[in-house]
Image (tube, rainbow, N blue to C red; front, side):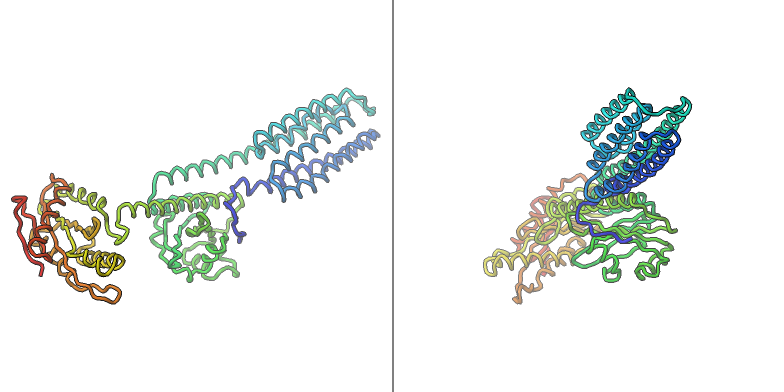
Length: 533
């Protein structure tokens, strides 16, 4: 079941199924009209009435019109004008039938309920209002025909039998159409609740992983499949990365894959197609059939996820058994996929904006805001540790202005990036490296055991900066002055801790630069220095 390219927003389930539903309704009416035409012609022979014969031909003409004109219009128009046009023709035929058969006027007047029953789920308020006025006028006109003279000279019992037959057929038809409309409205209501539920849950989080799991669950429920894995597409690497799944353990079983290893997913992404793979179909893609075999599933449905005309990923749904996928469920899944793709893309944008708000754009290191936030959390954790120390190191490059003046700002920026990389290399993964601005950097280190450990970490920073930097083929040597402040108990302010490290850094510069100095907690003006050379 390979779908056509999606050139606009995904169709809603109602939009997708409207033409088929209307064709089925018209097909039902055609069958009823043909049957009534036969009854009319038989009655015309029995009672020898030319009017009844004319009514039978008129009913057959209406059936022929429904078989041709509305079906042609459905392909080129939306449901509203088609239904209004068909209702107008239908009511006109009812009024004409009343003129031909005045004694059936009350029965025929009830027939105006038929177009109202068909149209109810498809029309807007204004169109429905026009149809109701038209139907009311048609019913009044049909009842009025009952006062016209007729030419049927038949017994009272025969006439009453035809009236009962007409009432039975029309009431049954109206009730059936109302039931069909009720089923459709109930389905629309369920789909609306599902869309609302997805939107509500997506609005509560911006975490990509949570978004992926929500999307996978709703897609699996919409299509009635057992499993769903959402793959995020990285165009810069042409790889598919598991983004979320239902059940959640499926994401743990899936792995990041190059798109080249699953060419069918490339077709889904680049051609914007939906594709169904049946494991029993020998013509299906062998890679995906093998995947179904490994998963113990029989059917796979692949849906593209697009946002702002850009590929976001692929939804892979799998299930056991060879169940049919009706168009309405598929349309709902496609609508959910579109909404989900927008939410995932918005979540990505939020994460990017959040990253930019908390990280230095030049080096990618934490900025001052993120550093202070993490330092406050670290101070709060000190109460739960008896021996661990919290260390803040403040780093300032020596004579960085000279590099900018002689080599230019572009190379100066590159130098700052290289400094950031070296600082990350000399600390532990759990430590925080930040750039405060200019040539000022800071380190946040937790769970050190002594002042000596703090000085040793600072000396590693000093030594790493002493190695020459390669800037566009030229070698540049700089040094850095490091100030350290240490706390072993909570209750101090982060700004005070950073200020002490800053004061120790200036002491390092006064002491000769290219060294580390520890701020002495016994007094704000006392320092213990140790050269990093």
